[in-house]
Length: 571
Image 1: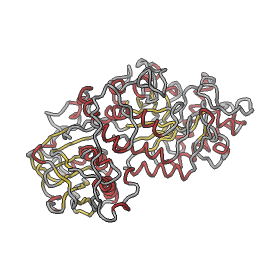
Image 2 (image 1 turned 90 degrees about the vertical axis):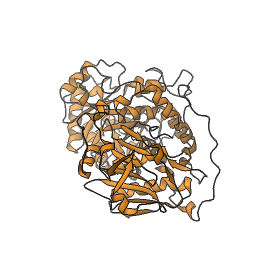
Image 3 (image 1 turned 180 degrees about the horizontal axis):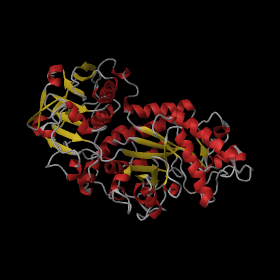
Image 4 (image 1 turned 120 degrees about the vertical axis):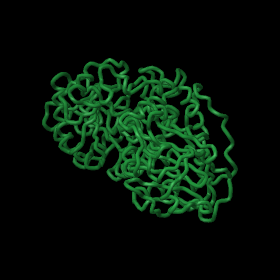
């Protein structure tokens, strides 16, 4: 690996070929006495132990300075110890204090203009460096004696760990110990995201996916520094989240899926488990309760919500736009308040997604009136509304975010909603919808928005995509995966990879780093990593994949290593 061969592309890279670090059996991780930082260190250790067979203990360090968190990986025989961790480290020939962006790490005149915007100059203290890195940025220094990650927050440390993961040989993804030289290329990376919101959506309503499958998707997001998981929890084919006040939603409404399968649903404890697991990986769960349309499963369970008060038949097809709750009945708003209230109480993140798309039979004032009242109900729970861009004509709610999924960048209604205060998440269906086929012969997926190969997923700019919308109103990007034709974890992964990293790079990397040829070359090196991790993926002909290497031979692991961290592969 070269230091810059990372996805998403880092903001600043300064290689030092003379400073490669070799991880050995006496490796140790030192970390600040901060619980959140310690947790990141434990996750790094859990990542390293299976493939290396090394014990990789985690110990406390006194290296924290002026608001920075510092995590150090070194070998016991060459470690500078805590004194070295708190002192200076030579990177690319320049000395820099721990937690400080010094001369080598300056985002200054030689950096891309976008990277420098509002953040020019050298930070002289740890506090200034931490502020410059922001909530999710990090600095990674690799020398011949250690690897150091500094950040202002545990999220930044975690993202730095994901970069370190990519700089190690692909065999680090192996679940069993292998013989390998665990080398990390020397130099420095200073990195932080372009957008605050970087996400993917998993539709668990059309086909239901078990908790462990969802956790695996969380891992995939975290690997590429995506920080939001949008769960589409309700639709015509199934209701997937338990609501105590309306138990038949899952008992009846959760018992179907596309094609006639038995469906399923998440108990509140299941949902809490997903939220906790994601939070540990610095991923925020965004629950979606789709209203007023896409509600057939709810109407089967509770006919009093239907306009005619008659239960419709269960639906296991894939058409849209035919179902809706009665916007003229007060009982509907009792239902909305109960459901939104219980889901909000389970969700520590700030967002609650109201859906709002394809309600073709709720028109004009009936639609906008429903949306405006539902927005107030969400606001009363303390959450901020996200909705598909069809919410645009409804009155603005404080902080409201529209998720734009169109295929034509000219959308006057959305632009007008932005002028009234809305912010945007960009998910153009012809670039970011990961249920679109790669090519005409892709065995699953759709093509109504076109074919989406890897270059199509990569070659667009979220800040410039939608006409008459100021760049600063774009919060970020999200890649939805609808599951009408996706039935298993292997199929989820096949549709995510290799396109998910393309969208992740759009969300994280400075626009100045955007380069298709460079990206596809970096992406190609991830094929062996996915193979080692057991991840199914599409070997797109656009990407110069290396020949699949033989996995290094297993090595004898130290006694007791087989019992360590049963969940290590979940990082």
